[in-house]
Length: 329
Image (cartoon, rainbow, N blue to C red):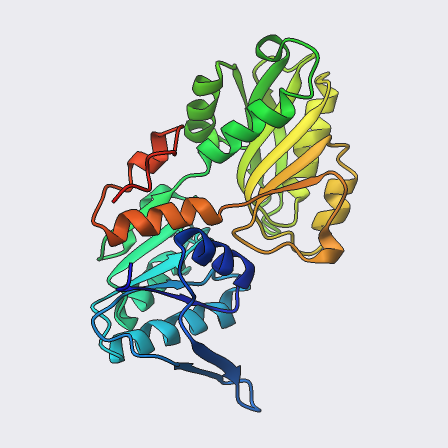
């Protein structure tokens, strides 16, 4: 893979190094810093002319890391890279994907336009908040999904520690209507029933309130599956509602750990058995808890980069449980 280059931004260096290790390459030499006024300064420290460049950068926290991504893409294009792929484990501004009230922007489309205008030839991301955001990009966009990662974790760790019959005592729960399709996919592969929490948001504050649970959770061990945990206020309400309905234990699996504001306090008070996250966003030490598990995504992204570089199908990664042969050229 002598023509492949991996540029790592400052949003998630540990994930970048993990990807490089899985690919068996050294990250591209770069300099990233800031001028005294905070302006981002970037330079590529080696020749990348004619190479296939992958730039790893999540856009959380949103503004600085997004701008850093755009600057790195521009630098790679001006250095005559043959192709530049923006690898964005967490795509920020994904929750503003439609005009749901007057005089608001569609920020997801704006950010997509910025990435394309900066010079990206392709985008690789994971678990977009809304699948239609793929259509906002006028370039090929691959969305990885964390279904396999969580499926394997549920089978090995949650079921593995349970002395009961998992298929009878567990149920998968979607925290809102928008997540039903994803929950149905994992539930069908695990042969588990599903339930859905219906909620509404207050017009002024935007705060979500759990209203009703559709599905029988009484006496069941519940696995809540979500893509983003931000302040965890909604998640706390969902857990309280599930407890009111008589569920036994609650396990939470979520892809992107934003964990803003009072998120950790809300989760601490939710009475969950475990919170399982991926490392698309690094977890700071002050947010770590004994009940938190982090799933490594480096190998998953490395496999996707490998497939893109060798012009192979990426879709097989979404459905293939056995990845032993997926590294073959």
